[in-house]
Length: 211
Image (cartoon, rainbow, N blue to C red; front, top):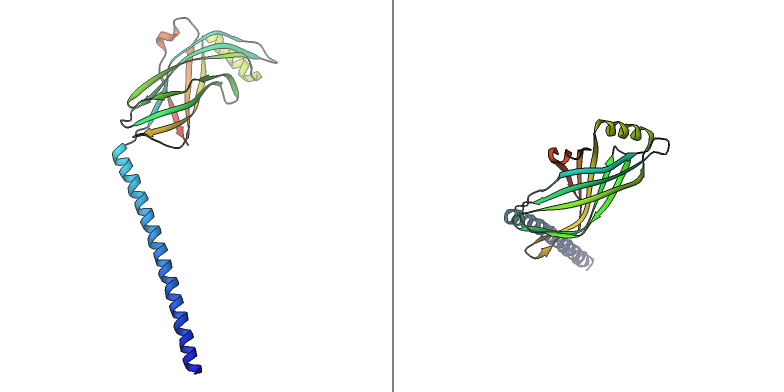
């Protein structure tokens, strides 16, 4: 009897171990299949949609009423007129911009102007141009930046950076993606101060980041 009981216990333990191994194998197989199906879905999406990068550029820049007060306590007053081009070359992807903002910067630390733009929808294979009027009203700048800006004023042109930030969704075949943060950094945007400077302005492409 003791030998029979021991044999029964060994059979039960072996059966339980076999079941655990079978369950583990099923879980691993399910995980592998899920990963393969997800990869296949991404591949099919890419082959069908063939997503292309979004291009941004500052195509026009004019500044008016540019003035820099001397340090200490230097400030900048100016009105920047910018045309910002957003190019969506995708055949199947449209873009929904929920909010857009533009910043005009001088150097690494001086923000001269901030301006919001209205929400808009960009269709497929479309270039949308946004006209931005960004006003610097007594924007504070450091002593070194003030000296450089006054030098730029005497030279007849000023070099600034333009940063665009936006929150957007991509739409494919009626399906919207999650929200993404878009950022375009355009530098240097050299703006002439003379009335005729706009005619000779060279378009400035922007570096783009999506997260």
